[in-house]
Length: 162
Length: 319
Image (tube, rainbow over all chains, first blue to last red; front, side, top):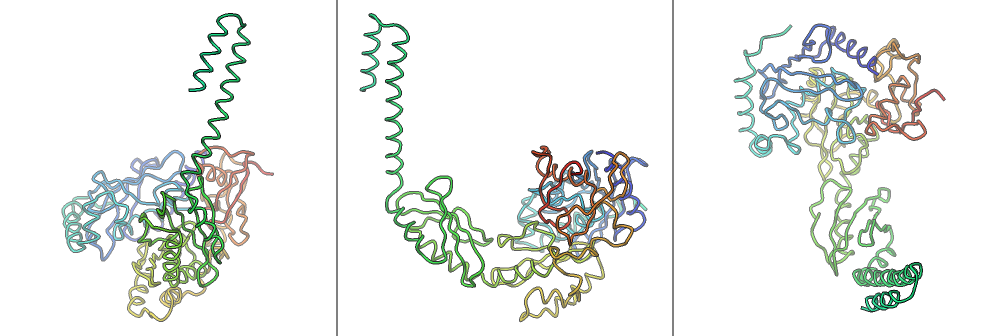
């Protein structure tokens, strides 16, 4: 059922261009080929990631939307649930029954959730133990590290996409 | 030893005169005897392992009011279902018999269980502690029940008392996360989604949080939406479907017509209040994908509706 995939993703990208959520842009890596999308995301306000602009890639699988997209950070992020390769451990990005992916979740909902996930980690299911322990027990230290990481990697280094 | 002697007898005899069939027959007799003996010895073995006192204790518990006893895969696994003091909720506790006067709690259908994996002397002791614990959580149960009843909970999929958090639907882009503590207060309240509108409401609302009211009432007041937040199960189609035009759209592929599919989206969810349309092929494919991609028997896939989580069945082709 590749037709459902193509029709849907085309429509989603168009919707995204028309009315994009706060601080998120999403464009295909190659024009009109919707297999890999490049996303630029501003850190949520009031979080240590506030001043950063993060680049991500979203890979749309063949069986989308019956399988979740693969979302990965390109910009290094200091976060309990994001590893050094930028992989994200998040329920919404996994198939049920383990995860909570649903075909009714749109790209927009997904990216907005990833953005919110930055400021609301899940330290009980961590990928990065150190960051998770810091987040749980030494919050100030964690914030400082996350802010430092954001300043080092996510400000000015990324060309701003429109 | 008897059997070895028997074997020797058969072979010494057969070598002299008998045919092969006779040999096989006598061997068969010998070993069928052996099987019988093994079975009987196994039974007595099992009864020895499980102490008689254990059964006495189980019997005693069974006679208590508000407790139901179930056995698991083996006789050493037990499940109790008790009804709490409010008289309506059922709570499960699983335990395992580890030896004389040794019981271990293997799982409890509650999020906070400090006594897990400790060893206890008697079933009664466990039930006593469990009952106290359940009763101490009554505020927690009440708050979660009210949230499940009055709010559209999007996560967990099938909320139970084991999950101490709820994600509540605010609008298509925004959800509210709430964690409930054992004593029934809300913590870790935050928004999923960057919405200034909801964010401002939450910030000012948290300052004026009324601790005498329950969580649902507070949420209602903060976000000022007694009407928008109605249970998913009772359904309020307007919150999923934003415009008339969208109504005919398939909730999965987000379009009306598929190039290689003759069907049009239909309201396929058995929950009449759900009102979201799906292509039969899209819904079927999703339900199959959920079960690991194996095509279902009789061509009917089952699962839950991807919008309202109502149990749902969908056949591959039109009936």
